[in-house]
Length: 193
Image (cartoon, rainbow, N blue to C red; front, side, top):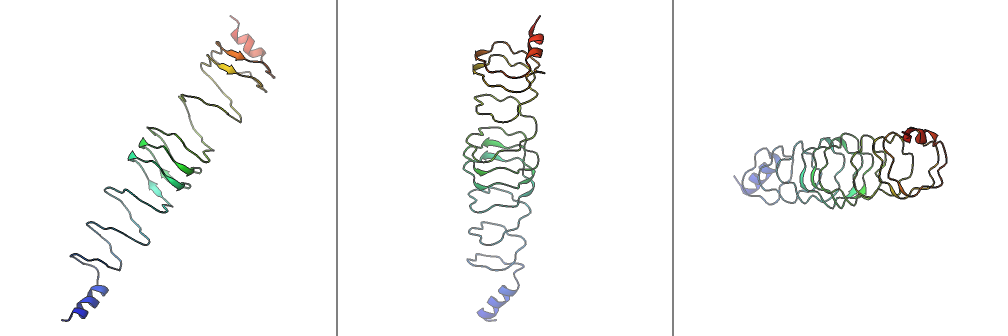
């Protein structure tokens, strides 16, 4: 049996290839061990282990993307059209650059630092409670505010429209509250003892 015959046989039948090989081409169902420098189209059902330093285009993620733990910083590129459950993300989510719109599914239980998100974060639907910090430059319709709205400090001018149906405590307002246009009689009635 010559070396060339063995080489041709290995090239045609790559079902079982063992040993140390530098360059192998073909279709493989199961690869175990240290595999570096994979080029081409990779279709994987499940990734187990450490999947770090992934560089390139990661598109078309379908399914359950849950229980991501660790440092998820400096994600750059297009993160649109992610479909599935993206829950239980713990770690540092800062420095995300790119378009994060059109995320469909459940994006719950995000814990950690979610600062410096740049791009389109529109069309957020659901319950957004317990916002702590400075919330400035809100443009649009802010309706159905219920609860304690006390200790408003600063310039609260040019509120236009129907200001009725405000339920809760609106005392402790300090600053310039001029330029109120609309229905404020109901507020006055509710604040009277």
